[in-house]
Image (cartoon, rainbow, N blue to C red; front, top):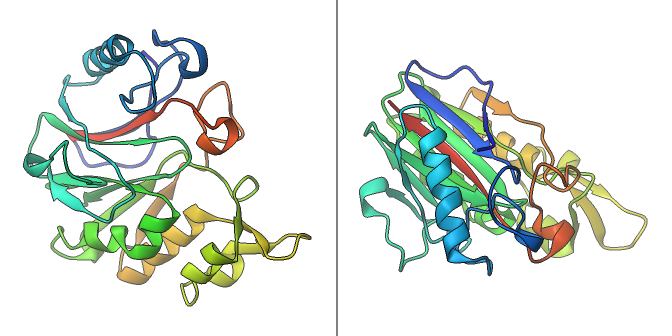
Amino acid sequence: MSFEYASWSLPAGVYAGWTTRRSGVSTGMHGSNNIALHVGDESSAVAENRARLRSSLIGQPDICWLNQTHSTVVVDIVEANPYQGQDGSHTQRSGIACAVMTADCLPVFLWSSSGTRIAAVHAGWRGLAQGILLNALTHFVTPEQVVCGIGPAISVSAFEVGEDVRSAFAGWPDAGVAFKARSIKGKYWCDLPMLAEAQLRQAGVSRVYQSSLCTFQDNTRFYSYRRDGQTGRMANLIWKV
């Protein structure tokens, strides 16, 4: 099983990281470690990939999978509902992992500095602009006690957007440098991880780690929806033992 543990400074007993597309049983465009059921892969292959993932993790936690719809909903892990759009979860429990699936969007990990509460959030540009990270922070006592990490996602050199996306972030901290105009009128390169970090810091989070890994550029390691269209998904998990 291909799982990479984040190298960030985490509290004792808290672990975080992400899968890569290697070492699974999926084939074709989903090759080989797709963990998503909604992308056209064989359900038996996804089940095997998920089982291998769980068995490989420290403490072998249960994994809370969400029905992600680019919403701004962040729920307690016990309220996860496969029939509702939910794009983040949080918990104080041990032995169960908060998980989000990605293939370019931001996987954002949050944890209290004491390690008592953890969360994982899926943030595409819409969810980010509409406030999903701020919603996640409300489940912690104060933002000043929260530490965040941003996992593998599409980087600025691969994420071309239009005026609609730029307008959605008008007035945001660092928006002036997060968008770089292209030679094509109305087109920009967008630094989504920078925007996320800027909002978190403005909200009071003092420590934000960046993986600086680009899903688009590393096709042997990561799935990328923008690069490939129909493709698999990685899992991004944080848990306590």
